[in-house]
Image (cartoon, rainbow, N blue to C red):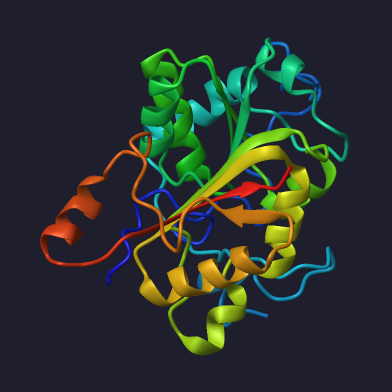
Length: 278
């Protein structure tokens, strides 16, 4: 099934960051101007398709690629104006969720929110939860910041950085109430499967950051990837499936236009919901 490049995804489907690395964007705040409300201070073939997935000095395979692509003026403006308000700069220090969001509330991590449509809808429907979105690409971050601004959301924060490093250095063990990863890049060619985001080391890391009883929710429109997701999640000792096999789409995950069109054409979408064992 064709994957929608504008759907929420983990890192491989969003547009290319303007900066030359995949982990920090043009609007990444510094310590002077980069505070969110109550938050902390703040090789490939060609240049146009350079990958950031090879084994890096940071010790993990990245699941996103550099592609030169378009960022709109409004997305650029949002990066420049709204990053200081709603973004949390990456730093190798544990994040205090209550300080970052200005309140104590259940905190959900989303890896790869794409252009932010699904994140916005879920955050609007669940105002009592905090949503921390991690995305590397400028266009997606700019689009998400616009949505926060236009919808008046106060329960969403953004970190523009590599998710594995965020998990390793900023998320405390047993601190998350949930994890969302929707429609990550399927990397359909078999030789590229090692680049898929959902691999045992990442799932083990995610599980260690989840509270007992917390949930992890994945969705994909690629059947082979769904099978891999189910195998990897089922093999993690800290997690248990909430159903037998794949889960029905929960009401809180909205149906995207692309997904609805695919379902009308007979294409499949697979949801997986596991919980952290007590």
